Length: 311
Length: 311
Image (cartoon, rainbow over all chains, first blue to last red; front, side, top):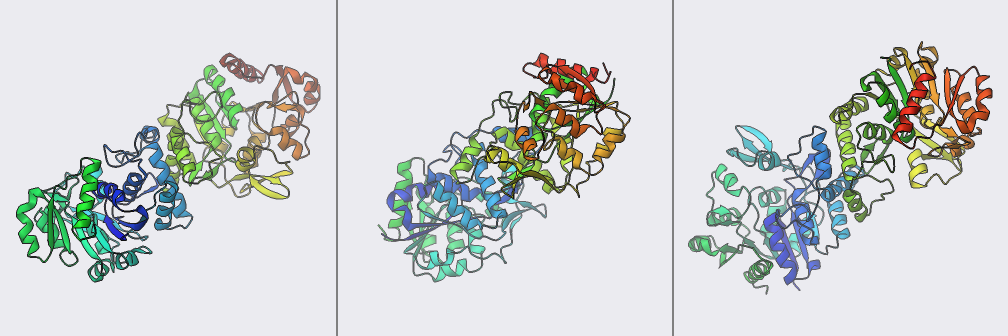
C-alpha cells in the first residue's frame, strides 16, 4: 500500500481523514498538524487542531461541532465561570483531561510530539500524528494595527474584526517536529487537506524547511480546495484571505500552492476556475467536495488519491 | 458578638464549623486552615483542607465523604486514567475547577491566601478563611526510614505503613499568612477544632510565631478532643500519634496543647481522663462530641463556647 502524508488543520481536514482511513490502512498515514492555533487558557496548554484530528480519528469527536468530545459535560468550565474566570473557550470535562495531561507532561519535559503520540496511542489511533513543531508558534491576526491571538479573534470575538493581515509568531525559529521532513520526503503522496490555506496550511509551510521539502519531494502532491463557490466550507478563510488582499477562490488557493502542487481537487461549483488553475501547471479534478456523510468523505478521499493515480 | 478564631484541619473541623456558623455570625469567624496536606497532582495545586472547609461552609460538600462536592461527576479523572496517568487521588469535575483556578492564579503571582479568599467570596462564604501559610510547607510521614508525602501515605497507601515519625518540610522558613497572628491576638476566643493534633493542628503550630501568639493572646483558648475512647473519630491520628511514641488519648492531646489551652471539651467516653487533664491546669467539659447530625454540630459548638463562658 502507498504511504501517505497529510497536511492538516482542524475540522475540514478531520472530515477528509475520516474517509481516508477507510480507503488506506491507518498505519500508512502520517498527519502533520497545524499548531498555530495553540493557546494557553486556564493555565492549560490547548492544541485545538491536534485534538480535533485525534478525537475524530478516535471516533469520539462531537460530530455536530467538529471539535470537542461527543456527549461531554461542562461541569468544570461552569465552575470556573462561577469563580469569575472568563470562559469564552469551551472545554468539556473529558476534553479537559487531555489538556491537563498535555500541560503536566510538557512541564515534565516531554515534547508536544511525544505527548500527541501518547494520546493517540491510548485512544487506539494507528495513524502517525505529528504536530508541525515542538517549538512555540502562535498565529496572530492583525486587527486595527494590533495583534490578536488567532483564538481570541476566532472564538472570543467570533471573527468579527476586519482582518488586516496575519503574523506567525515564532515561525523563523521553529523547527519541524521530528519525523516531519522525512514524512514529506519518504512518502508516495502528500495530501494537503481542505483546511484554511493561511492559518492552517500556511503555518505548516512557514516552518523553515517544510515548503522546500514539499517542493523537492519525489512524492505526488495533491490538495483539496477549502474554498467552494467563493466561500470557505467552514471557518474564517474568506475574511483572512480578503484581509491579505487575496481573492477568495479555489484559484487563489491554487496560486498559494502552485510551487509544490501536482494536482488539485476542486468543487463542481468552481468548474469555472479549472482552466486557469491548469494554466498554473496543476492537474485539476472537479467533483463534489462537500462532506456531509461518511460516504461523501470516503468518496472524496478516493477521488483525491485518484487525482494522483494512487487508486 | 464575640470574635472567634479557629484552627482547623479537614473533615472534623468542617463539621464543628457547620455548627458554629449557626451559633455566631459567620463574619465574626476567622478560620486558620492547615496546608500541610497540600500537594501538586496532575500538575494542579491541591489544598485538601482548605477545600474541605470551603466546600462545607458553602453548603456544597459531599456529606457522605466529608470532602469533594455533592453530586460531582468524575469524567475528567476517568479520562486522565485512560491516558495512563495514576489517579489515586479522587477529583470530581467541579472540584477540578477549584484546582485549575488555584494553579492558574498562583502562576499569575497571587498568593494562596488571596486565592482562598477569592474562592470563598465567589461561593458566598462570609467567614474569613486563612490558609496557615502562603509558603511551601509539606507534611511528610517517616516510613521505613524514608519520607512519604502525607497524601501518598494517607490516600495512595491508605495509611497502611507503620509510622515512625513526621517531618514538616518547610516549617522553619514558612511565615504565617497575612492576618494570621492578628487573628490570634485580636480575638475573643480561639477554638482548636477536633482535628489531628499532629498533622492538622501541629502543622499550624509549627509555623514560626503561631504557637507563641497562641500562648500570649488574651483570648480564651479552647479545644475539642479529636480522640474519643482512645481512637480518632476519623483519619489516621492513632497511627501517627502511636508512631511518635504518644499515647492515643484525649489526655495526650491535652498535653500537646497544655501551654496554650484554657479549656478542653472531651467526650463522655473519656470522662476517666478529666481529672488528669484538670491537673494540667486546663478546665474540662465532658459532653457527647460525636457529630452525627446538624443538631449535634450546633450543640457541640455551643458547648465549646460555653466552656470558655462565651455563651
